Length: 316
Image (cartoon, rainbow, N blue to C red; front, side, top):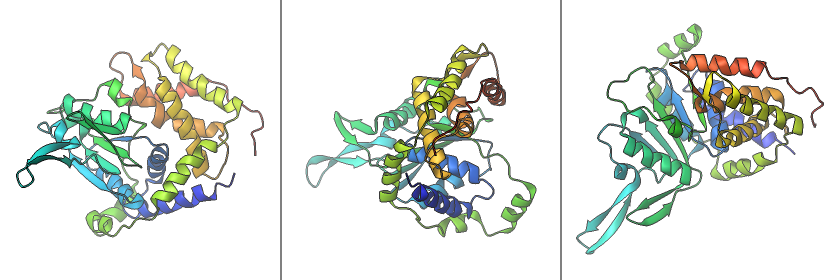
């Protein structure tokens, strides 16, 4: 299988987003992997690290209809899904679509909305459809929700339950820049100006083709077994209250396929499994006590290191 169309697509997306977001090519690649898998991204980090700018840059790069929703405590489900309103001119009710009827939805500070509003968003993410007054409407393809939340500020927030966090394909974090990268950023033109200059560099047809072709990336029985060893180990590990669900195992498998293709291979290697484990699995694991997120990541890494890596020759 020729994967040059994957690598070319990958290069264009990363180069375009990097004009705004400096030094975060790895995170951009992970967001792209999630997008090609048809999943949704939860970007969690401290304020001011560029979460919203990254997602806005990615949305402009892939094109399609884009909507940004600022989540607040008074936001209602109908503010997302749309409403039926009475048109006095026609004497009939008409449906006014909400912002979820877009290709790319940026849910900014999702943990500031009430659980009821959060649930309406997560239902659309899972079912790819919206029901208003008994009428069901399909959402557009492609469809991706990219949500941000601030993990350190709890006042006036409604944290997502673990079962709802599991609906996100990946949970990512940007982190701080390196010193030289940050010097470049603070001395350049405002980020908003750079963002306005971004253009679409890939088409919806290309995206649909890659989403289909990604399922053909080979996963040998040994590598698939290695992947399942990691998943099952999370379920038996005493430091974890709940391990990875079957939904998480499917997401893990598909993420490895896309990650391999984006990096020029038509087969998955153990390094792909190890690279995707953190972003795809960590937020699906419930640890006991008051373990911090960093502790869970460290536990997961130790777990992976304890599992033998397959050494058999891989298909080429």
